[in-house]
Length: 205
Image (cartoon, rainbow, N blue to C red):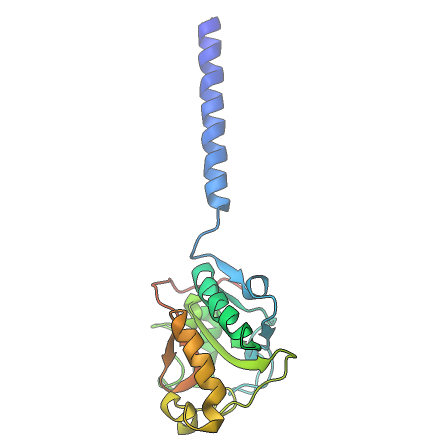
């Protein structure tokens, strides 16, 4: 009887340990987690344009101005931010993770595959692996950029936007982002994709 009781205690303890391990693993940080970039880059200026009417749709699409990215993507962005901080620059974040349901709304407003991904294909924004951004000085004042956000004219194309005196800050941004592993979009100087494969998400902001 004593042996059976001891065996029962051992099984219960082993089960409890397994449950505790599983819970700890579930809580452990993962590269694919969506994280708040404000926690990773505290001096970043969060200016999510789709949380305002200052975007191509003229409508508020996001319920709140929260910039989320995959943990691994946010870590890359932090490297770019550190490099730019040493040059007395701060990141201005215009768009980050975009839930798929909001991508669907955006597509209905702007059904142009040159600038908005079809929801069935999915945007890297909806994977938490893309960021739209600009630069400010250390006091938070936006620096001169070639165009406004959501300017879908040829002036916003990367090859043109990086030219001349007006493209100086974008060239600075482009160098820092490329060194952190990001790839710029040809038609939007402000858009950068991170490497890696991530699933589409409709998790709320």
